[in-house]
Amino acid sequence: MRTIEVCLTPELIHQHSLKGKTVVVVDVFRATSCIVTGLANEVEAIRPVGEVEETKELGKKGYLMAGERGGIKVPEFDMGNSPFEYQSEAVKGKKVAISTTNGSQAIIKSADADEIIIGSFLNLESVSSYLLQSKSNVVIHCAGWKGTPNLEDTLFAGALIDECAEEIDPTGDSALVAHQLYIGNHENLLGIAKQSSHAERLAGFGIEEDLEFCMKENEYQVVPKLVGEELISV
Amino acid sequence: MRTIEVCLTPELIHQHSLKGKTVVVVDVFRATSCIVTGLANEVEAIRPVGEVEETKELGKKGYLMAGERGGIKVPEFDMGNSPFEYQSEAVKGKKVAISTTNGSQAIIKSADADEIIIGSFLNLESVSSYLLQSKSNVVIHCAGWKGTPNLEDTLFAGALIDECAEEIDPTGDSALVAHQLYIGNHENLLGIAKQSSHAERLAGFGIEEDLEFCMKENEYQVVPKLVGEELISV
Image (cartoon, rainbow over all chains, first blue to last red; front, top):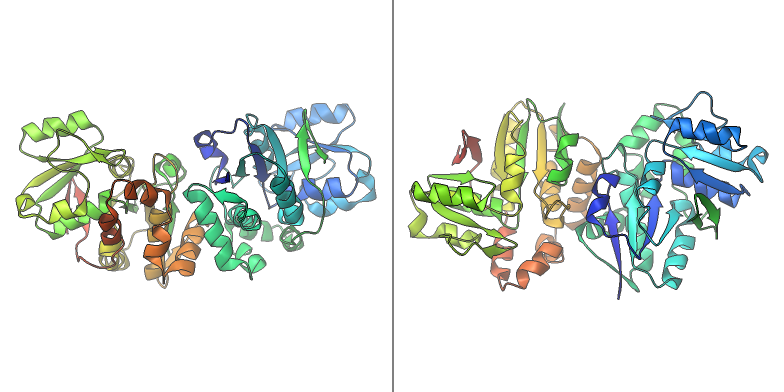
């Protein structure tokens, strides 16, 4: 039986062998929710970058510059890190370079994997279908918050494990913890996610609508995949 | 309100400020269960050490040598890492030097704390009473397994948070995850713990009785505390 592991934070990713595996990167609040929303709304491609300066260089080459530091839009950028910004007409057909506190970093630290795809509650079922049709073992790489595990990404990991459980075996205790967290809270996902530290921080910025949107399941049918240096819809 | 944090593995302990705080070290399978059992059964003191060689040096000074590597007793040692060994007449009044894969390391990496105490299901209520009567903020330091988070220590963290919840505020998402894990599984602690990777490894050594004993709640009324370099009952 194939296996599905969970890495609760990028600081522990060295404990997982990624070679030959499919890595699902998740940063529910809000990077991977933005990426899924963008590619579902006809953004041509999204390029994850680590540093603000690198984003600005890509801006000179025609990319829209997107991202935040500490939850706040970088002043010179075209866009911040709200999924609603990725629904606008202005982004259709464009390429976006995105640099965020946690999500971009997790994508970059997954480089050893055979393939990297992007998960969020918004495309949960599309990701599980993709994994079920694949033949690879899977690692769910939770972006967490500044190196610490977080509630909402762990909850997503549990949800994805649950969707795949009949055919892919949860392996390692982090996977069991995530799965049990989901089983105990699947009828109250938004309620429990609102208790997270990250939700409390973001609520301070007045963006509770973002949080509610990011917790919607199966809003979109796309699977963003890293091809070269860009995420595109497959 | 005072705070209680959870560190899911010693590899993440640098994310927690320990100064001025009480750290509760837990390694359910089996180091901290052994320490609690020993001090409840009249072992005079238990000295956690990192390396096998250091344990042997203490052996020359009259300590009983105890511990394992990878779940197996170190051949030259007097004792392995089973709580039942700590109930024998042979250990009464003696000092024990203990070196284990995970538990000893977590104790040593908690050195910045104001005080270090030892938790396990066997002394859950005694630890919670101790914390409730104290005035410090708390970090529960889970020993995990070779640097990875594990199910049984996370479950204990959730149980301890639950005991203290009216007076000490779970802080940070690892604490919320641990608490939710416990809430969802508190009626089936042994059942869920037996699903853990560590339980599966240990079952391979034919020591299921150890596992069942380690999951018993409130078997003993002791709180081991590190004083100088030794754990004693307070």
